[in-house]
Image (cartoon, rainbow, N blue to C red; front, side):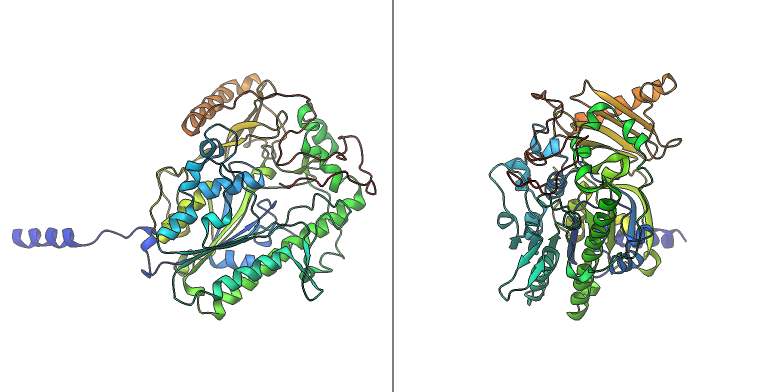
Length: 506
C-alpha cells in the first residue's frame, strides 16, 4: 500500500499543470480583430438594453461571447484613450510628465510591436491622431496601415460615388484579411471615427453623418428627452463646469427640441452603421473559414453625453463620460460561458495585455493593466480590482482632474479649481447628482477616498504640475479647444455664420 501511495505521488508530479488562458484549446495562435468606436457610452447598444438603437450584429457577438457591464476608460478623451491602449499605461505614466504626450520609451513597447515579435501580421485602418514624441505613425507600429479621417465622413470615390469612413475602414480591413494567404496569425485594428460628431459642420442632421446603409432609420421615432436632462441638474453644477466645453458643445447639438430629435436620430444611425460594418467583418471571416479561431473585440474610446446634465462630449468624471461598452467574442470558449455578462471592473488599459496574453506574446513589465482573458473564460480571479484611478490632464483650467471610481463611490478633484472635490455615494445616489464632499456625515469617507487617490496616483506618475490659466472660460488644449465661433454657454450658435477656421479634431 505504501508503494502504491508513493507511485501515485510520482504520477501526480508528472501531470502537467493547467495551461494559461492564452494556451487553452487549440495551440494555434488566434487571430484578433479589434473594432473600436468613438464617442459611445456603455448603454448605446441593443445588447445593453437600449430601447431604440438597433445593433443586431454586435448583439449576436455578445450572445455568443462576453459582455462587460463595468468597462471604463482611464481618461475620457479620444486620443488619450487610444494612446493608453497602445502603450498599456495610464496617461501620466506613458508621458512621464503628466502632459498626455506619449514618450519614446513608452512607444517602444507598444503592443503591435510585441505582437509582431510573437509572429503576428498586424494591420491598422482608421482614426489615428496620437500625440507622441518623435511623431509615431501607424507605419511605425503596424505591418500594414492607413489612417482614414472623418473630414469629411462621406468621401468622394473615383467612380463619382461617395463612401462613408466606416465603410472605407472596413473595406481596407477585409482586404487585409484576404491577403493573409500563408496562415500566419493576424491582428487587425479597425479604429472608427464614428460616432464622433463632425465638429466643422454643425447643421442639424449633418453634425452626425451616417452611412447610407442606415438611411431612414429611426425617422418615425420620437426620441425621449434624456432622463438626466432637467435644467435643474445643469444649474446645480459648479460654475467652472457650467462654463466648460461640455456646455459649449451642448449648443452645437441639443439646445432646441427640433435639433435634439434630428441629431440624435443621426447619431443613432451612426451606431447602427457601425453595426452593419461589424456584420461585414463577421461574414468575411466565416466565408474564409477563419471564424473558429478569430477573437473579435468591440469597445469604444470614451463615453458621451447626449444632453444629460446639460452637456455634450466627454472629458469630465461622470458615469456617462467614463463608462463604455466592451464585448469579447472568443469562439474557442465552451458553450457554458457563451452569453455571459461580467460585472467586474475592467479598463481600456487592460486590452493590450489581454491581446498579448491571447497571442502567447511577451508582456512588457511597463504594462499596468490586467489581462481579462481569464474573465472571458468564465474564471473569477480572487484579487481583481475593486476601484481604479481616473484622470484627465488636458483642457485647463476647467477639466483637469484626477480621482477614484468604484462601484460604490466616485471621487474626483479638479486640480486647477483650488482642488474642487466631488464625492458621490452611489449606494444612495446612483446618478451622481449629489456632491457629498461638504457633508460632515461623509467626512471619513471623503478622507478615505482622498488617501486612495493619492496612493494610486503615486504608483502611476508625477503630480499634475501647475499650468497657466489665462481665462476661466478658455479651453487651451490643442486637442479639443473650440474655434472662434464657439458660443458661450448662454449664446446659441448662428448656423449660417461663416467659420474663420475649422474646428480641431478630438
